[in-house]
Image (cartoon, one colour):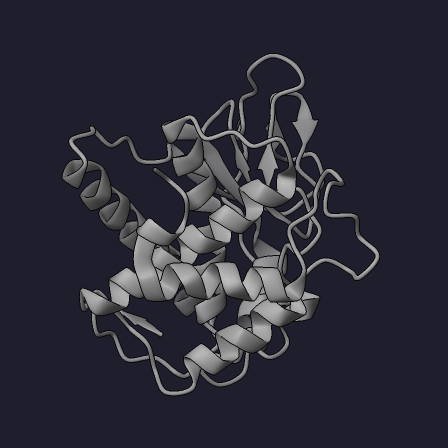
Length: 245
């Protein structure tokens, strides 16, 4: 997957089960007052152990893909808001972090091995070591899906979309991420390489909730089949299939 025609390797999504936010809460609500998400700290960088990448799986390419994913998401949602006569405000910040408690959202510490959207402070935060490890194992498409899913939560907040159950919020975000990627491919902003759709299918099947997870439980994201269906519904039919109206 490549942004703006930038040549890249083919993604490897088959191992997604070990990496993606399958059961984690990826949309955080405040439990206290507004938090300073960053404070005074050094920019997060993948640790030396993680950065021993082979081939083209480098830290520089990971950072470029993350920047491309953010840029494309901002362009995409700006276009959608403009088309509907709304003004668009990009998500305030995308924050890499490395340690438990380094970033907080309205009084909740963001744990390692996660990626979240914080409603109270309007930022996306992701564990850079965990994300880079997934990037190495899975491929660059992981970055675009991850950022697209979390960005969708920010759009839900901007549109005032609230559901009773977590699973409804998460499956809609999967659909919106699919629409973002599918529409970006159709617009020529993103190049999808041969086999990537099959790998998306395999990856999404791997990140569904465990079979014993109640659909109504806090933090439920959906069964493997539900997540695949939601993502590809958005990918193939755009936002009209995501229940935003």
